[in-house]
Length: 210
Length: 88
Image (tube, each protein chain N blue to C red):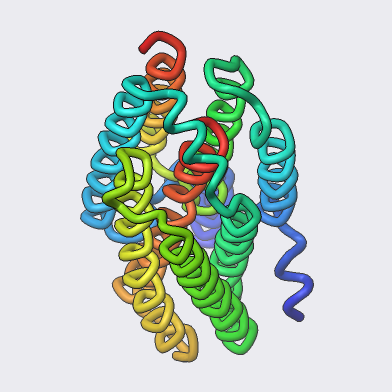
């Protein structure tokens, strides 16, 4: 019986190394709920069509698009790109903080991301106001029509993203998150990164290469 | 405590993305129409999109199908935008 116990223990020990590779391959997981990715890819595809439509319109009047591009506030566009990149770093670091149960750090990081989101909106308001005061409106030409449509749609995503960040902030303070709540947090974080991702394409498309 | 959280790959990626943004701004803001620089600037943008997906959205550790779909999106996006810029 004693020998049997030892052999069973040996069998358990022998089985442990075998579980390691299985566990590491099983570590691949969908960030957030799988359904979130239908929304995210759908958004990416819709914006992809908008990007292609913009390029087609540009091909019809490249000089007009280039002249109009040079009237944009490129400094604000650059600042907003850096602001969203920084917000994404805060969010991904906040997720790491939640996983390691550093709740206070997670909340401060999400507050930082929220501040970045609000700064983006503030700069966008400044930019829109300046453009309209200079006489650049959607009625002016095709470039400005697409500029206001594309940046307006993106700004709508920023507003949704800010609401999502507030929801994440409420979850980050909880001592223990269930699997479902953690999936919600990861999915919300991915939505914010999508906001960043879309602007990463919009900035060069509108401000640099049109 | 918070600073130790930033000792991660995502922080390095953020630095690379910031540098790539500033370089593409410096290179791309003053070129004329029809410039090949525009294609490079679009390429840098898609490069940045890919790293946002892999390291911020955590698709690097996602199932290969999901990661593959995202990688395909990046390739198709660059091909479509660069192709339309050059040939339309």
